[in-house]
Image 1: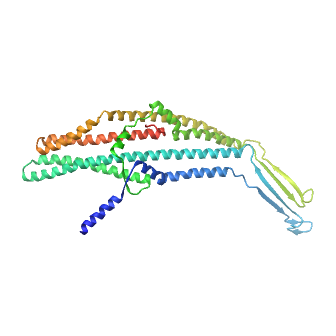
Image 2: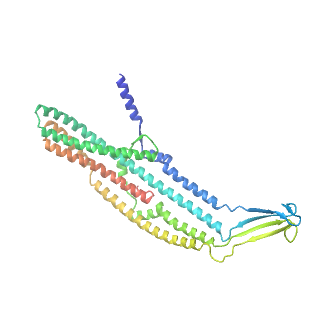
Amino acid sequence: MNKIAGVFIVISSFVAAQQQMSLLDCEEAFQKNNLQLLAEQYNINMADADVLQAKIWELPQLSGQINAYNPEDKKVFDVGHAKGAQITQLIYMGGKKKNEIAFAKSNKELAQLQFSQLLVDLRSELRSTYFNLYYEKLKLENTDRQLGYMNDLLAAYKVQSAKGNVSLKDEVRLQTIVIQLNNDKIGINKDILELQQNLQVLTGITDDIEPQLSEAEAKETLALQPFGDDAELKKKAIENNADYQYNLKLIDNSKLYAQWQKSLNVPDLNVGAGWDQNGGTFKNEVNLMVGIPLPLWKSNKGNVEKANFAIQQNQKNADFQRLNLETKVQAAYKTWKSQYDQLTQIKSNDLNNMELVYNGMLTNFRKGNVSLIEFADFMDSYREAALQIYDMKNEIMQSAEQLNQLVQTKIFY
């Protein structure tokens, strides 16, 4: 009784450590828990702080002086007869503050685009991992089903081989099929473990995630068609891809930076007022003070030249990114189209016939109507075909997701 209770507890713990989640559930958990996404958000907050900092002016400066030694009265620190005070404020000229603020706001826009791109990349990784896991689970189920039958068959053959009723060669032939299936299972389980770990990191959920996707939903997703051809998709990608938009915004950002650096060549003005008790022309005189550097040369000439080169560099980078994006979209569309057309050539009846023949081979082999060589050859072909069909379906999902990642707007309807 205790053993039964122990087994029940173990099974309950295993079930509790798994969560059945739809793709939407995973995406919601990802938005809420993903640490990379949460960390990237702080870059926007820091950019906001930079905008705030850019708006702050230099503090006014207050200074004063007192007499250290009065030579007439031979008195040290004659504060009563000689003291003064000044207050000055730096006045920015040439639109420095306006340009600095504009540059800081542009940096915030860049941070927002970087966040958007990271969101797209991680969500795409999440969806790809989810579909990978779904099809690896189907492959595991199919392999386990074949293994269950083949292990029973091998066990029976071992008994008959020991009695001399069947040859050892037949037993070894079955053993080879079982080894191949077990090897498939090991590889599939390894892939599942890696995918589970990746999903846990992406969603922030420590339990194993079991994809909750019905066969009908999977078929519906596979049947989705992109809106337009590759030319239309390229246009949408140019308009919506955050990474490309970041490179375009970087050109504007570098122009604002160059404008700011150019304005730094304009001398600033120091304005202030001073009071002197007894050291000026008049007693208790109040003076207006104005100070400005002499613009004998452009003190920021090198930084201006460097900023202008940055504009040209960013323009070339943007041109490259556009070409790179267009070629990627074209290649991704062709890959999806090729894989989709290949899968549609396999009709539902073909898949049903394959399962029908598989079940028929099992039945006829049990009845002795099929030789071991024929059965083994069929099982080997069926094993490879079953795995390939799941891989074909998965590759269509992955290609579609790559298109989504590049175009970054709804394209499958």
